[in-house]
Image (cartoon, rainbow, N blue to C red; front, side):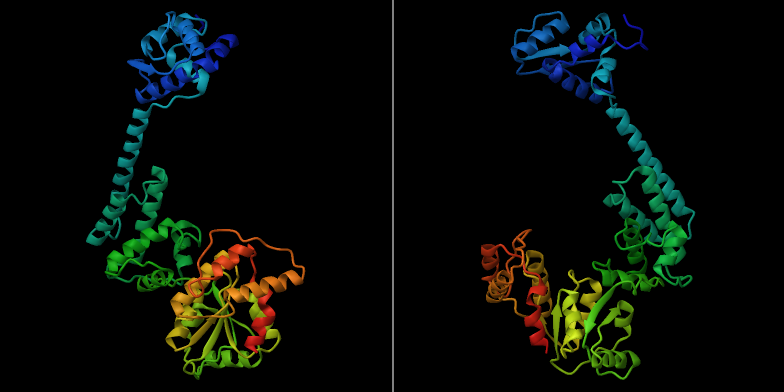
Length: 426
């Protein structure tokens, strides 16, 4: 028999690794891992062909004549120890296929780590300024019940929840407003070490907002605007300057310096980038039924400004981010009417559907006939064709647009219609 620290002969390992025994080792590995690596019980093999039965007969030292047979693990273990391999069953399976996992032990260890996680987090809550707040204990129970942190490794989940408790404690959201932070980034840096630790797409941000909603008796926000409002209620200033919406030719009638600045820029045919902070301070009152054109591509705004067009424009810049929708919401509340143009591709039609449906916008050169005219114009210019990609989308305003686009299989970006759009804006 080979000593345990010596490798078995390569030819013995090669014989055991033959394809005819592959199913045996697959079933044995699964059974051992399920058994906690115990050499007990039997496995069943079915549908064995003649070469597999012959190899198994040689391995077990008994004839296997049926395609279906049972193998006792203890017998297989004995044969392997006595043979050229000189190793027990578990060691042989490791040699052939890599480490074995003791699944019952792994489950027990994972459960122990989870038990330690919740004990540690509960202790952190008990030692925090939130210890006597019923909402805080309800929050932690909700987090545990919903499995919000369950997909993380236990240590990562523990760090995350302790950071959330620290943040909620700093905010003293149960009634004592605590210090006014200059911004969410400052608060995030204080607790996480990075200014992006509380960005909207982080799990930490979602956990803290869930706690704030319970503490303040506010609904859990479902969109970016609601999240910003909840941060403000907790005396945290959200980031309102990094995202902007590109505009041109807006002429609000208010007497404030911001309104005057917009009118002056419109007079000088200058585009304007507005932040969320600008929108909070602007009075966007306009004459009744003012028409505002909406485009998808910034090049339309650039060309309109360069040629001195007089119409008002708002650019979605492709995706209509929150700041875009907030501006359009404000203009709609002021009584504006909208006309929309975007790309003739499937994402462009999906975005157009959103704008048309939300604001009752009039499609602006977005009919099937417009598409076919632009396609012909593009061909005469010799532009390389760009095939459509993605999932086809029905246009809410023209049931003929989708089949027209599918028939030509040609994506047309907004720049292809620029000469027509500028003529309309003039």
